[in-house]
Image (cartoon, rainbow, N blue to C red; front, side, top):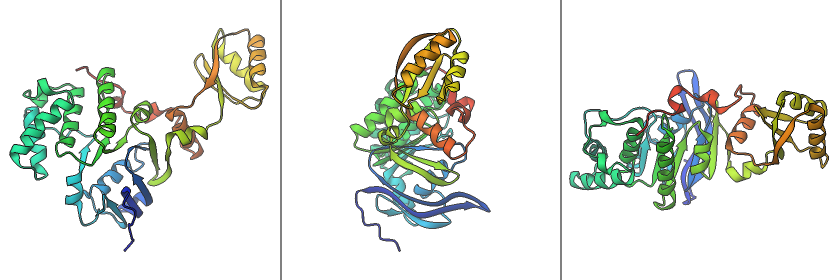
Length: 331
């Protein structure tokens, strides 16, 4: 038996493997997670949801070991689930129940006293912004309200760890921002650990300080976001008018590495001559440079760079999204 001796860790896995028949969903995961806000990233089918189910003790692992808050994921799933709140990606709500009963019932399912569960249901529904809707049936809720109700169900028992699988799916901008602020407050004020998956990198970056990236069942990155950003090549970003494709051709003909997004062009800084070359190319191409400055890479840049190095055919994170990810109805 492996000695899990580091009490600072909230989650630890050793050589964790999960197979579905001949298919390897998770392959030898070795992971040590401390408390905080952690983004769990990867393309569809990478193994993120399987990882969540394993650490929740919802499915049996094929081999390897794991502990959550000191509890064995193979034998102490009930205890683990009493300490974790899980907000699944799929629709887990009963449309015929009012929100208060839905959340209260979630608490009772994990062993809460009915009167305590009822009291907590009122509290968490207010926390997620549904105080005035708590007596409405779930079936009348918008997508944003349903996501908030799922979050309330996950928080009913005051868990130490909160797992959110695609929490901003289908949300309009206002609902999305409220969800992200609520999750961030849950970490900072509630002193909880949050594991959050998603394909919208801006959302992950707004809530999380570090990421774990899973690809083909393996962990390929585990780092703080700021550390990863420092490893990305320095770039100059320009906004041009009057022929961005000509400008790109001119820059590339001078040996510069270029990324173009419409009228926005990002050029890798090769030397101190990079900016003078950019200006020369602008004159040669007959374009106006409306704006120029150092580009600060965001999490999407980092994600796509890693996917490219892994040989994945992902040009933008929108390639990973279904229609449900793209923003839905309003509250």
